[in-house]
Each structure stands twice: as C-alpha cells, then as structure tokens.
Image (cartoon, rainbow, N blue to C red; front, top):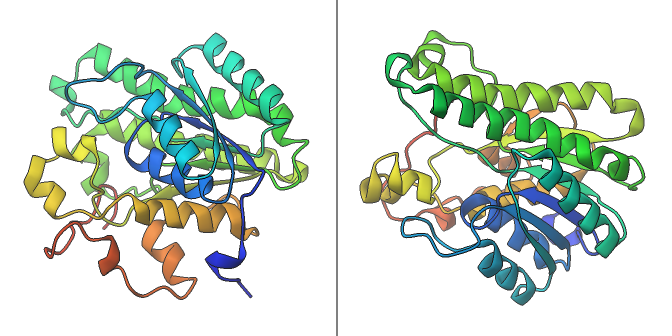
Length: 277
C-alpha cells in the first residue's frame, strides 16, 4: 500500500537537474529542499533576464532558504563538457548522485513550414540530446545509489493525428525525451535504476505559458507549478515505478488526493495541456 506524502523523505538525497531557475523545475527543487535534499542546478541564466523570472543563483538561494543545499552551476545542457563538470562537482560536493531530473526544454510551436532550422536544432539539442547526455553522465553515480531515479518532464506518446500534425518539430523533441527515458528504463532495469516521465494534466503557470502560450489569459487558466512538484515528489519517494509516462493529476489521485483547487491560479477551469486528449 502506498504511504502518505508526509511519511516519505528525500533527506540527504542529491538531485541533479537541468534548468531549474524558475517554473516547474524550481518548484520540484524546492519541494525536495524542504526535506533537506541537495540540489545541483545546471542552468544558463546567470543574470536577470527581462522576460524570465529568476536566475540560477536566486534559485539556489531559495533552495537553501527552504532547507536544502544547492550547487548552482552556470552551464549549457548542450555542452558535454558542461554536463560532465557539473555532475562531477555535484558528486564530489555531496558524496554521490541519487536523482537526475531532465527539466530543461525549449518550446517552439511553429508549423513545419515556418520552423527555422536553428529552432529545430535547438529543440533537438536541448530536449532530446540534453536528456540523453545528462542521464548518461549521471549513470555511474546512479548505479551506486541505493534508490536511483531518472525523471524526465515529457509527455505520454500520443500518436493521434491531432498531436502528430499540430506542431511536428516540437512533438519530435518532446516525444524524443520520452523515448530516451523509456529506453534508459529498459536498458538499466537490472541495475535498479528507475526512469519515468511526468507531464501536467493542465497548463502550468510558467514563463513559457506567459510568453508563448497566451499570456495572462492562459495563466488564469493554469495551475501552479506546485502540482507538478507534489507529483514528482510522490514518484521519487514512492518506489515501484519505472518505464512509465505519468500525468501529475493521475499520480496524486492514485494517492488519494482529491482537492486540486488548491493549485488553481484563478477560479477559471484550467485548460488541458498539450499532447493530452
């Protein structure tokens, strides 16, 4: 039987996360930090940006205030050298790595004819290659961890024409993240490394939604990032799952949670997120 969220802990665990300066990634990091987890953030935003909230340094400060330890690493998930250096530094500082969270992602919903080759390559490099390479860099440490986990923020593989044809460039990048994670789950099952994907049932109030998916109106029809943080926490502390594509609301409902109004940004019903029917 599944125990309650309050009975579990990530105390002393070390999480390596791509991105995490803001939004869902930061919410997941803060939830882990309340247990006293160690968080290694690999992010590019070192200085304030006019359209983005926070930096890797403000995120690290928030993690420490929440009760965790933080190693902010200004780096690019597209760089193998940057990934390797951050992972090694985190392992040395905290004595190992228990969790890899593939959070960094680029969003571009341009239709095929208008999607530039530069934007296509950026999504493939950050979303797919970044997920694969960061996970791979963490593998030697995960193999030595007592309860290792890879968690990727990517959607279920929905092959309906609606989603195959909506924005193929972005679809390829996000489904690539999912396939990479499912592949790792299968390849390293005998090593005891769990690997799962998590996706929101609804829009989540992030800078991406504000800047790309409809602005304030879409924000009002979103849920707060804390719902993804609670679902991620449940997955990372629950055990028994691997090779699954999970949805935040379903994860929490499976634990007996029924109050989702607490995550609402406003009184308006939240919109369903991409790739979910």
